[in-house]
Image 1 (cartoon, rainbow, N blue to C red):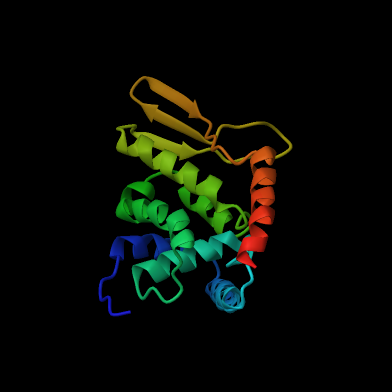
Image 2 (cartoon, rainbow, N blue to C red):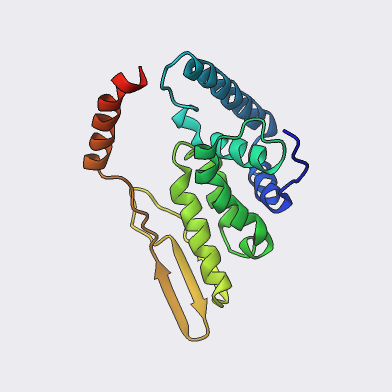
Amino acid sequence: EGHDWRDDKLMLAVAWLKSLVNREDLERRVEKTKQDLLAARQQMRDGLLVPHFDATDTAAWYLLQAESFATDRAYWTPEGSMRAVPFLTRLGEELPLLLSIKGVEERATRMMTTERAQPDSTLFELLVALAYRRGGWTRVEFVPEMPGQQRTPDLVVYRPRKRWAVECKRLRPSQYEIKEKEIGEELAKPVHD
């Protein structure tokens, strides 16, 4: 409370992503995300360790965190913002350059609709494509995926007399890491209780 600054560059990315999907549907999703967070906060006050959001719509959670961080901080959480704000800030700072990448809107739309449970991979692809454009590659294009037909790279990048296929790989926690986290949480449960 009491902060009067806004992060307009971050809001550029938020507005762009919002523009890619049906407004009413997105408003409903973000409102549900707000209510989930409020319910989680109450349960945490009651001593329960619960998730802040519905993991099936992480994209809406990221938008809520970014917009809240950029404006009023009403629904801001440190752990939510740290996952979304740095990436969306970069996209907002360089949105005109990002929009010069062929296929970027289709890829971002898919992140906001059919792949909304796991936006991290798409955000990584967007940032890699942006890095190639910033790095002087004259043309950067997302390659349309053909599931079940053939494997394709994520991007094709061009400069004079050069063309590269780019496959983006983002490390995710292994099953071992996931299991270790679960065991750690179980061990900590008596302390939290």
